[in-house]
Each structure stands twice: as structure tokens, then as C-alpha cells.
Image 1 (spheres, rainbow, N blue to C red):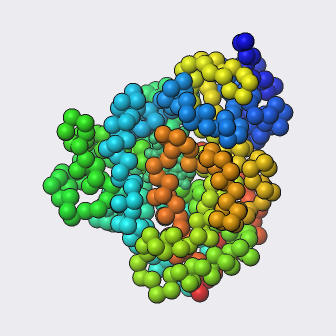
Image 2 (tube, protein in one colour):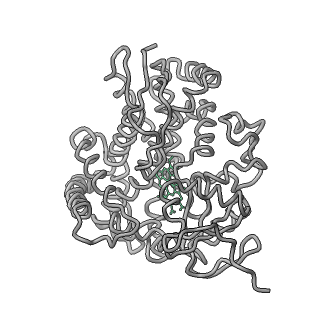
Length: 441
Ligand code: HEM
């Protein structure tokens, strides 16, 4: 029996649902779910897209990725930014080679060194603040994640000397992301992107020249990339190393800073739970000079908080693929040439999976309750399957270190401001100014 295509949400002629999708994709997908259930379609300009909601369908989506479903076509707009790397690798063979060479950089073996660097960055930031005052939440989370990345990726010397230039260049490159326009039109933002990439390449080339043969002296991402060997036994070409740095920044910078932003907001809105966090921080960090994985593991209230933010405020509200070969899902046929997507932002609020799904309740992740363990694909804020995020532990450790040091040093509070979402951002975050008040403890 041939199945029919999924029911389609009402849409405008030509544009389809593109405007609503650009304005607030989660609200649009939630509306689709409420109207039609777990499988439905929206129209993005000329392209129909099937939306798959719920853990069984997530499992199918991740299982079909790189088979019927392609990331490369869905993420083509990233090629001008960091070349044919990671999700945009031209073949699965090349992807697997990149994965073999680069994913160990984020492995547990390297983590102890990164944790020390994360700790140094936030401790220096705290030392530079006064006895009391305010800081802007978005400025803080973007600053701390950018400079932590610069330190962990490129090393302490680079962070101290070139950190500001690195931050400026990366932002210039990221401003050139465009989902619609041909990427090489002579527009100012594309020219600026290419100029910034060329300058970053010069900085990375200098660093590579300095690092060859010095693996014993350094413990950062770039040293691992310099020492790595491709399948043919050759080192990674400098252009590939620059692209890897930009690719990791794209995957890890805005995502981590938005996640941290929501973690601080939700904690400061929930003082009863936050009192437990502070008590645990004080106990675990008592007399601890340097953070290690032992302290990170012991700070479980912060670990649960970050899982609750992954659930309630996922930085990637939806994940997209191009349908290379048609397939059946949830009683419908999804034809070749469509897009397919899953939505962590909608699926994480299914009441069958999570009790009182709209409430902030980090203890749902405690071993006694473990609501997320009902299905391996219930919680998908870091993706799933072969392409699951390589930086999940790195990002989680970084955020735990930052939050723990902040609560150890300061009493923090939110002002009276209302939270207005900044619709101009690629990743959902509140509009600035968003002051946080602090006073040294
Ligand atoms: C809170 C922070 C982060 C979130 C929410 C996040 C989320 C995700 C998600 C959802 C995916 C899968 C995308 C898809 O299937 O379409 C992904 C992939 C990836 N992430 Fe993260 N990420 C975070 C931080 C990081 C960091 C810090 C790094 C690196 C330093 C990183 C590196 C990667 C890479 C390399 C991939 C691609 C994996 C592959 O294609 O095999 N991420 N991330």
C-alpha cells in the first residue's frame, strides 16, 4: 500500500510557512503538532518539510542520517564558512576520516587540561570585577565562552595576545552566514567574511609553524590538530586546521553561550533550588584550588540544571536533513527531495515523557527519577546517533565550572526586567540589556 504524504499546515502562497518559521520556528512546529500530531508537513518557500515529533521518530531520523537523510545538503550554507568539513563533508568516507582524526580532541583523555583552562578564564574574570555591581548577561556569557574557546583551542599565549582579534574575526565570519543568498555575491558581509577568514588563516599558519615538533609543550586543540595524521599518513593541511577551528567555533560558541544564559536566568528565577546548588558548590569546592573531574561529577545539582536547560531551552530548537531517498514514518510517506526535521524544543515538552513539562525541575534528572531514561531518544538537545555532538562533555564541563565559580564568589540576582526574546539572533536568547546584579560573598 502506498502511504500518503503528511498533512500540511495552512500556508501562504509562494512563501509557505517561511515567515512564521523565521520569526519563531518552535511556535510554528508546536502549532503543527497540536493540529496534526507526531507527523506533519510545513512549506518553506518552494520546499516541503516533514516534521517528526517523539522519541521513536527521533530514533528513525538519526538512524536514517547518512542513508536516506543527508546533512550535507541541509547544511550547504556552512561551506563558505568552514569548507567541506563535519556535517558538510562530501562523502561518508571523508566524514569518518575527519571524525577519527578530530573527535579525540574532545575526548576524556584531554579533558583535565581543558578544565584547568576553563577554570583559569572564569577565575580571572571574577578577579577583575568589583565588590558589587551589574553585568549584562548576554555580554558575559558570550565573552566567557568566546575566550574560554580561544584558550582551549589555541593555547594561553594566543588567548592573551590575540584573543580580541580572534573574537572579532570569528564574529565577522559568522555574520556571513546566509541561508538564502548565493554565498559569493559581492555583498559587504560576504567580502568581510572572506577577509576575516584569510586573516585567521595567517594567524593559524603562524601558530602551526611555531607548534610543529612541540607536542610535549602544549595541551590544546591546535596542538592535537598539528600532531594528527590523516589516513594517508600526512599531517592535516593548514587550511583544514583553520576550517576545523571555525567549525568547532560554529558548533560550540553560540550554543554554549545561549545554554549558559538560560541556565543563569532559570536558576536566579528559582531561589529554592538554587540554594541547594550553592550549598553543594560550597561543600564541594571548599579548599579546592584547581577544579578536576572529581569536583565536576560531585556537582550534580548543576549537572541536572544543565540537562533541564537542554530540555526546556535547547540551543538547537530543530535539526534538519535533506531527504535523499523517500521513507515511511509514523504512517506517512516522506518523499525524496523534501526536508525532514526533528524539534527538541517541541518534543522535550511531551507530557508522556516529562512530568509537568513546562516547569523548571532539574531534579527530574536525579537517579531516583531519571525521567529521560524512559527512551534513549527522549532528550535530544545534543543530537543523536553517529552525528551526536562531540562537544557535549566539553560544553557541560565548561558551564559547570563557570556556574560553580560564579555562585562561589557572588550573590547574584535578576533585576525586575521582563524577558523579551531577541528575534534577531540565530539562537534563542533574551534581548540585551539584561542586567545581573552581583555582590561578593
Ligand atoms: C550547549 C552547547 C552545545 C549544544 C547544545 C550542541 C548541540 C549539538 C547538536 C544538536 C548537534 C547535532 C546536529 C545535528 O544532528 O544536526 C551537534 C553536533 C556537533 N557539535 Fe555540538 N553542541 C554544543 C557544544 C559543542 C561544542 C563546545 C563543540 C566543540 C568544541 C561542539 C561540536 C560539535 C560537532 C563537531 C558536531 C558535529 C558532529 C557530527 O556531525 O558528527 N558542540 N551539537
